[in-house]
Length: 490
Image (spheres, one colour):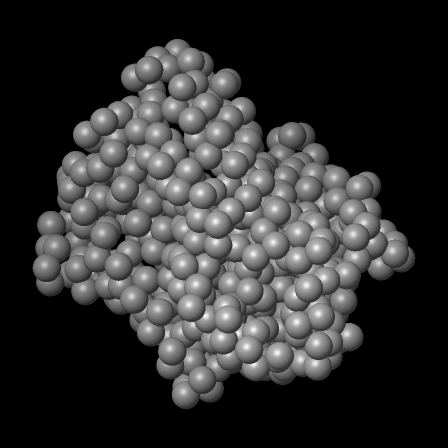
């Protein structure tokens, strides 16, 4: 019976993989796809200031980051299929409301709702891949999931630029609708009814609220610090209050029978180190992607459409690299070596851009090879850190581990975007005009963040097999009975 179970699931494994990865693609795409929509938004909402318009991006980022950890816990407890469907439904409905938004406040509110749906999809999708597919294909599944994530984040500005240029800003949200409906249909038909844990109780509601508020207000403080002022009372209240809530949530989770945070994961050194690396990687990746578009449009005077196409080869390279590394990882030495390789390539590319930026367009000899090199690095690091985080946790905690790791990367991204705003603001204050200094400064920041991540990975990232749990033992000796029990709960 145990040998027939994987054989029965394997024919549909590709469809399950594509469905789960599709959810990840949509969630990560919308974290960057609106970057180039702000100028077009200003035409429809002429009375809104630039800080007001930036909330179209910030609202998604704040709610996405804030709810990832609670979503991971809910996926483990309520069932990955159920939470995945809920997330897609919320995301798709919110996308429609975003496209129909009659005013900026309504658009911002619906973007926040869209971020909440995206937060539900991410941890549930990875848990589906790891638990509903063949166990011997887990690294390859993570590679596909990482490829979708890396490609979506990298291609977001390109897709956004093309859609805004051709159809206006509302099309950025309408494009999600057919894919969302298709994913809902596929998830209902293909995903097995299964819960993620033997435990049916909802995680500590107060602790869950504290976690969401902690990550949310800290992300808000970092995102708006450049606008409000870093010593402004609002910024300090967000950062200090968020940190206090985070500490309180951890302390509460250590004693609660159904905790909001899996504190056992925090005590897992490989997992903790991987999250630090992911945070630093996010600090480098997000400002890198945004400043690349700003450089192409501001220094080389590319149109948004042309800049979008110029970014596409790097996005393709990221996807290909993640897929390739998932196949090569076992031969290379596992996720640690993949992460180190990606960070090393990223660092080399950063140094190239820091010392090689030019005000004269040179796509074929400069931007194309640099963009592809950066894409390869991003694909490798995304795959390596995602695999390291997931495989450092026991199977019953895959979703929680994924949620925490993605939160680290998203929060790092918020820190990186805040740093970009500070560096680019200096350009206006100094009357920088066509100066390359602000762009170089952002690439320096990203390169330093990658360098620190590389050092930490080299000396402290040592992966060990996840601890065996009762669930894991049952999976070995009683796959059929466990599957039957999960189906009865799904």
